[in-house]
Structures are given as C-alpha cells and as structure tokens.
Length: 297
Image (cartoon, rainbow, N blue to C red; front, side, top):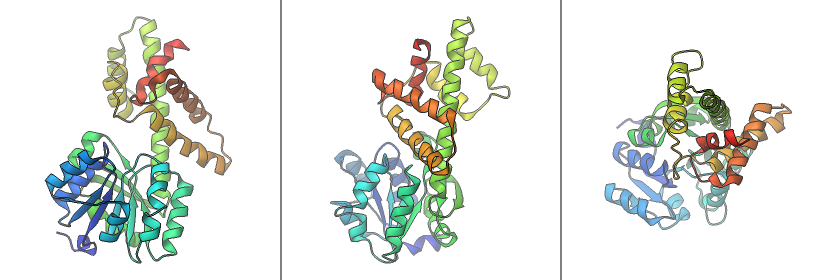
C-alpha cells in the first residue's frame, strides 16, 4: 500500500447506485483501508458487506467513523440532503475530507467547500466519467477540483477505481470540466440522432452510416457508443444515464453560462429536446432515447 493511502485510516462511502456500488467495491478490494458504506437501499449494502465493507446506520454514522468520505449521489439535490440535517456539516471534524464523485452545481460545490473550510475540513469535487462497465473495471476518468496538497493525498484512492485522474484546478474546477464534457456529449448525441433520422428517410442504413462516419472526421466516443450501441438498435434501457439526469447536468452548464453572460444556443436547444423526450414519457430511459422523437418533430 502507498504511504499516501495511509493518510486515511477509514474510508466512508455514501451512495451505492449504478456507479457507486462498483466504485465502493473497488475501494474495498484495492485500497488496503477499511471501508464503511451507507445507502437507503439495503440490497447494495448487503452485497458490499459480503465483499468486506462495514455497514453504517446513517450518513452521520459514516462521517463519525471515517477520515475521508466519498459521495456518489444522483444530483445536487441529493448531495444537499446528505450535507444538511444530521449529515455532513453537523458531524464533520477538523482534517476530514469529503470527495463528491457526482456531477453537481458549481455554485453549490463552492458553497459547501466554504462551509467545511470554516470547520477545518475540506471539500473536493471529483466527478466521474465513462460507463458502468468502466466503474466495475476500475477504469473511470475522474476530474478533480482541489488544492494540490489535497489532490496528492486523495489521488491514490481515486486510482483504485480510475485510470485517468486529472487535476483540473481549485474547488469547482472538476465540476466545470465534467459539466462541459456532458454538454458536448449531449449535443453530439442530438447531432447523431438527426443524422440517423435523415439517413433512414433517404434509404441509407443507419449502421452503415455510423460505421462510415467512424472512419472520418465525424468520429467520436459518442458515435461509437451512444450512436452504434443505443441509437441504431433502439436500445434505451432504464437504470442507465437517464434523460432526466442529462437535463439536470445540462442545467448546470446553462447556469454557468448565465453567470458568465455567455449565450450557448446549442446547449439551450438540446435542453428543449431533452425536455420534449421527458414530456413524451421517456424521462427514465437512457438519454439517447431523444432519437426516437426526431422524426416526430
């Protein structure tokens, strides 16, 4: 075990959803440090207990029993819920570190960091990118907003579940980077959806179209994954990254643009397209489901 890892004698983990459970499992297996976990759902807790994690009774229990706490929650609203009440702020101790792995509002991130700093503790944003499979394999990409000292201290733990770890700058910079990653992804998936709709209408096979585009300047991760694996076969499962989550993340980009006084028309349009899919009943479906509705407009 790296000496850096021994900075933290116990790891806390809150949020064992689609991404959180495999991330927590990688920490249990690879960190060499005891892990205590909490989620409102008993099933992932039971699975992680079988893998060697301790089970906490509450958010407060996690904070009280750990030196570093990872959060992997669906949205800023959920992070807000564990921060307040009998949660993080009330129970935090001097020297503790909280690492938020979710995508969240930059303003909220900086506000929470300030509140913890006043109590001698630290908030770091470390939003994750890539797929559920990457979370299981420990090959995520993580964008970190923290001081250089904190980044050096937490990076070895993050590398238990990530192969690409980027220090993006101070608190909030990780969120900015991830939010913009997602903004570009959503706009690209909309462009692919439009291309597939037009190809179908003109008698060109969508699979052939995307395979051909993948060999040229229109190639992208989104094309090879969201396009070929979701849009072409019409595969839009629940329990994947949903249309509602996509719109939530895009709203953070629009918030950044509003604060900066910059008009981002492509993102605004993509937000309306996501909302149309939600209104049509696809809010819980994998967000490339927007392709279903292109031909109907």
